[in-house]
Image (cartoon, rainbow, N blue to C red; front, side, top):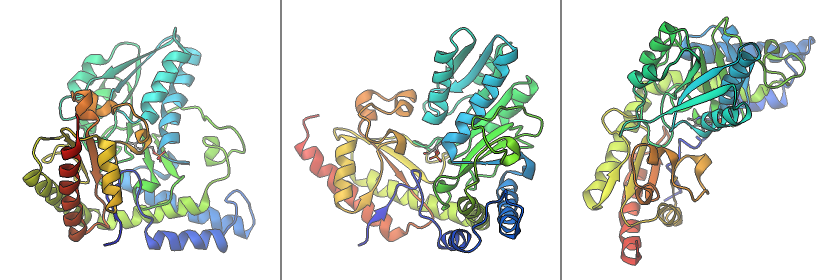
Length: 388
Ligand SMILES: Cc1ncc(COP(=O)(O)O)c(C=O)c1O
């Protein structure tokens, strides 16, 4: 059997149709969208077209979409761009976020409170046992100094889905800006920035079968954020630097394809996830299910295996040709237990025994059966040698 990829939350395989159109915009229609000659205008037209496609996914206006280099830049820009602008004219800013945000949000908040200790304070909300941030807790955390709330839509390690519509409603009612990191949910779960009262939203192309190195920040009309890159006035002067044309065109194509297939995809992905869990839980004792099978995002299954080190299991599965992860891609390689798993109340030892299986639209039932059996055998072997 060929290698089996169960790490779709880290990144996805580029769709062949996406790769095809990207090649066209690298090799033939390679103009700089800022140029006024034919090549440039052709490029600009393609970029505007891609902007329309991604805007449609979240019911945004085209003028509210700014292309970036990916989810990390979008998260950094949303929070820094707003808060650092705000404190120029005001002497206090309070941010509400959570303990289980992606590092792109979490570390940005940590940086801001360190850089401006007199001006910026941050509240990191604790999730419940399933990884949800309660809208009620968000409301309770708001103070007269709160200027922005940043709560992710789908958690990348365990798949918990937050009630962003309710959080958005609370923020709008209190005149506080609401940013959501929708990197794991964009094109997978319906989002409507208008009805959900979202002011800022981050998404990334490589999680949706598009290329790496391109993403977007939605900035609601009239929300004032400062650029973090200065230069040649691209993206209406908000995000400067020559646009990644092939990447943007590919992102647009990937969004268009995903919007046509997501309903079918999510159903199939859910049944593959359920099968994988069924296979593992039937034959492996002493496991902790860290994902919410009933209400969480269908593509993520996170399990802790008692007495087994997550990294050892990952390597054992890799030898069998099954690619998984021990947490978010960004925390892989670090020996620290996952902040997300500790956040939902796991003990360190259980957090370090966890594996994230993330399923995508290219996986098959045959692959899931193979992977399930590989897990059963690997856990049995590792436990028989374990001293934990
Ligand atoms: C929830 C979340 N936010 C942000 C990012 C960062 O996105 P990018 O890889 O495009 O920088 C990721 C990537 O894993 C993610 O899962």
